[in-house]
Each structure stands twice: as structure tokens, then as C-alpha cells.
Amino acid sequence: MPSSLIGVLQRHCADTDSACPEPSQLTCLADVLDRIRDPRRVRGRRYRLGYLLALCMVAVLGGATSLAAIARFAADTDSNLREQLGLTTSTPNTSTLGRLLARLDGDALDDAVGAWLARYAADPVDEPGDTLVGLAVDGKTVRGSRTDGTAVHLLAAALHTCQTVIAQRQIAAKSNEIPVFAPLLDRIDLRGLVVTAGGHYLLVVKGNQKKLRKQLRHLPWKQIPLQARTTGAGHGRREVRRLKVCTVRPGLLFPHAVQAMEIKRRRTHRKTGKFVYISAAP
Image (cartoon, helix red, strand yellow):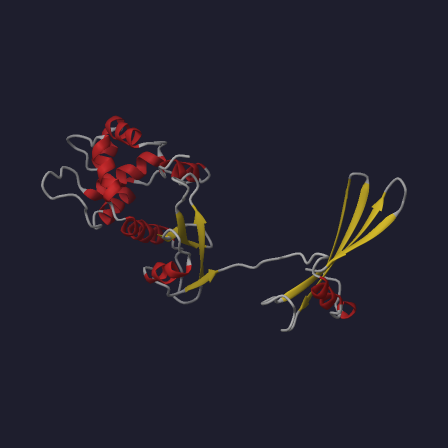
């Protein structure tokens, strides 16, 4: 699989309605990116860091899938965009871009882009404090990043309303998301935000868990009202499903379980009229 993340970003952008930033936004972004520590030696610098990084972003949004394609995009773009990117005399070649991106501080780049996205993604509020904004923190493996048996894993913070990622951190190999959680939030202004993280799990208790199933059968299901009823048909059968949910107390033979769910299904064969009851309680 390819090691470059350019293809990953391109596939992500293909599923969105985002257009290329407006010229004013592009200039602002270049100024923000220019504040990142420049890994290049002072001697021999021909292009400003912020404008080179903005060029890479615009080229990828325009369909570039490699460093060579980014360099071609810079050489072939129109004069107005070239001026916005600060490329008034010449354009960078592939080796220049490759050396820069290989030495760049990825966390610093994430912080800069995240802050810029947060500014444009924020919804105006009439009075501060009236509305709380949801911020989801979740970890994902970057598709297309696997090399030598390992893949890039990121912990990202995204706004609920617009699904915009405003911060992210790479998780070190042989580690997990927990050590990265606090440093990720340290770079975000959390005033007016509600941070959500983690998840819920639904597991089926099978027949080989006899003691646990016995505990579940003795829950007060008869006193619990029916909470959902659905019907479906297919393969010559008609099925009615009934659902009940019960809060469980400590002592269940399933640590940290909070709720149990009883699902009863009545399956009727249309040709024979015979029916069978099937029940499960996770």
C-alpha cells in the first residue's frame, strides 16, 4: 500500500463539498503556517514556509497525488493563484518539497491547521455562553498509511456540527490513545465546549455462558414495559421482534455492564403457518 498520505487526503476531500479556499483565506492560512518553526537552514531559502505549505494543500485539493504532481501544479497554475501563493519569480521543484515535508514537525503543522479550521468552522453565537458546542475525540488508523507492517494512527478532535477536525495528534508505535488525550486538548480553547470520548459496546451472551444467562433470565422482565416492536419479511418468513431494556445492578457476571437487553423474535413460515420463538439477552 502507498506510504504517502496525499492519496488519503484526496480521497477524504472527494467525499466533501469543500472548495478551494478563497484568496483572502489562502493568504491568511499562509501567514498562519509561516509561524511554524522552519526546519530549513537560513542560507539558501528561496520560498517562505507558509506559502510552500499552502501550495501543497491547494495542490492536493486540486487533485495532486504525489510530490511531482504538486510541483507541476505550481508550475502550471494561473498567475493570480501564483501571486496568492507568493510564487512571483519561480516555483519549487519536487526535491525541495520532499526535503521540507520530511523534516517538518507534524504536530506543529496539525496545531496550525487546526487553529485555522476552528476559526472558520466556528458558528457565531449571539451571546457567549448561551450555546455549548460538542467536540468529539476519537482515534482512527489512517487509510493508505501502512508501511513495513505498521500504519499511522491519529487521535483527532472534531466538531459535532460540521465534522471539522480542529486538532489531531499521532499516536506513537506500541502505545495507545490515552497518553495523547491530554496533550491533544491542551492546544484547544475548551470554553463553551462539551468534550465527548469513548464508546458503548453491545455484546451477545451466548449459550456457553450458562451462569450469566441464568442471571439475565431472572431479571424482572415481566415488570418492564415493551420498548420497541418491529416486523420484517423475507425468505418466505415473517418475523416480529420485541425489545426490552433493563438496568443491571453490580454483581452481574459481566464486569462494568450497565444494561441488559432482551430481544424476542416470533418467526412464522408463510407456507406452513408454523412459528418459532427465539430470544436473546445480551
